[in-house]
Image (cartoon, rainbow, N blue to C red; front, side, top):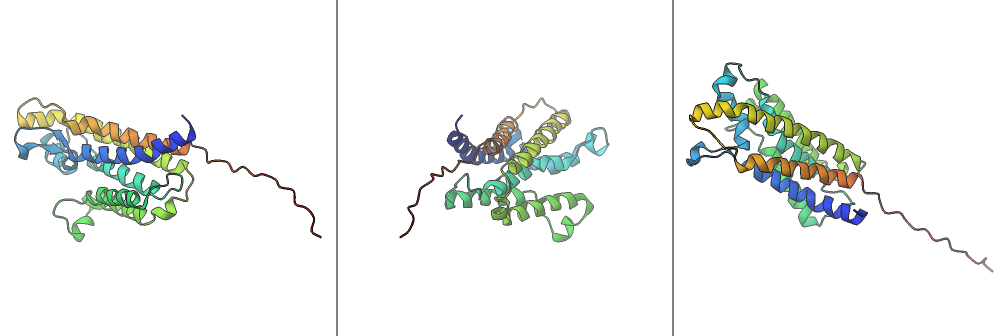
Amino acid sequence: MTAPRFLRFARWGLLSGALMTLAAYFGPWVPHSVAGLVVSGLDLGEYVKFLPPVINGEISIWREGFYLPLVTVSLALSLCAFRRELAYHAAVRALLLALAGVAALNMLPPAWTPGLLRTPEFRLQTAAIAACLSALLASPLLALLPRWTPALFVTALSTATLYFAIIQFSRVLPAIEALYNQDIQHGWGFWLLPVGVILLAASTLALAFTQAPSLNVTSRSTAPLG
């Protein structure tokens, strides 16, 4: 793949990966014919706290891991929105930053208050929101970092997302099946999330491995004055 194709892939893969990841995260992970019993990826960070095996300590879960898709999307977009190599139009850049903000703010717990955000249970969530919003505000400066920086961060976050969101969901699914008293098939959000997350990582890697165009300097002889 030539350098321009790498850049085109990075440019549109980043936006597509972010949209796919968010759609997957807000989509059903536990499908059900009754709308009130559908569980999305967004619900899982709170939902798993109330599962009996989690309450009893039979299943050990890092519930904040279910918010990693949002962290990955938000930081990936903030790191890349202003990158000169990607040459985003102002409208597309505004869309990327809006999506980064939406992803960050969706980590807020339901019925939150400033006091609730300072409690030990939500302290890490609050720190993640603050980090993502700070990155959004600093995105023009973050664009000055070396090209490998987004690739390093996004690939690491994508790997963590695949483990903590996907693997942990598979671990708690039997408890959800016991609660629903029926076998449950994975919803389409569960299957789409890895595609979006991997596309995000691949886009930043494509950017990292694209060499900047070299400048051709042509020497010119100048006749002496006079």
